Length: 299
Ligand code: SF4
Image 1 (cartoon, rainbow, N blue to C red):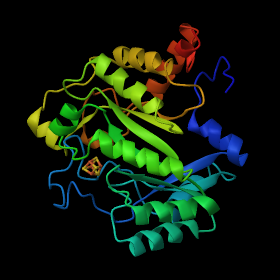
Image 2: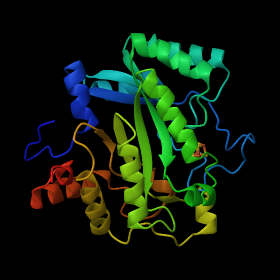
Image 3: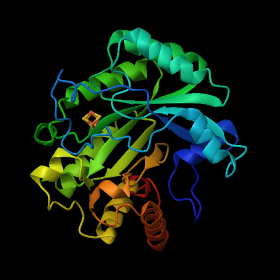
């Protein structure tokens, strides 16, 4: 990836434009799945940072989203984004029918499926491999951190070994993977966050999502740590993200650099709903430092 003054990291939007020759929009769909960390298989409370909407508060159905977006982007293509809760957690025939129902919509040109690394058994992996042969696809894996003590404290319920296994099985089926990390989890130091970053960027991923740790009013963490603020200021967050971008290989696509929660449930950081402001500040800081994704890896 060759970077320019205005484009200093490899955004997934750029990747999709290269791939499809037009703007592509992900449509977040609510497929009605639950999560083993909510339905009692692993627990009932969910991950402590998770809102009751299952980290997909903004989801709605495909036709209504296409209607809403068609005036602004009449020529865009669309990917079906199975975002809310755990989108590989259902009987295989249910998964098959929901995935193919989305793919059969005439405006849908590919599929993105978000899940937990411990919810990918062989049957599901084989179904994903089957779809991957015929459709554009990537799988998003929540990892959040590589540190077992944080995984336990946040009641996440899977382990780094589950991630390793998922990555191995997806890679050997040639399925693209995007890994999610959360920046600013309670008690994690900057060193801890960089260790997680280095681990996942060396795991053969196609893309990465860096989420700003938000406290939302509907999460268990708000009840436990109501005054917790992951980053004191926008500047401190921007500093960290820019430093991280410098250590991400330039061929890894960047899918997110902020959080994304509805303002009406956001508690902290109070500035974190300003996605555009945060992204502008990151881009400005990259230009000011005259740096870019992977810059530190060139040395
Ligand atoms: S963050 Fe994901 S895995 Fe955790 S409780 Fe929420 S939906 Fe389940």
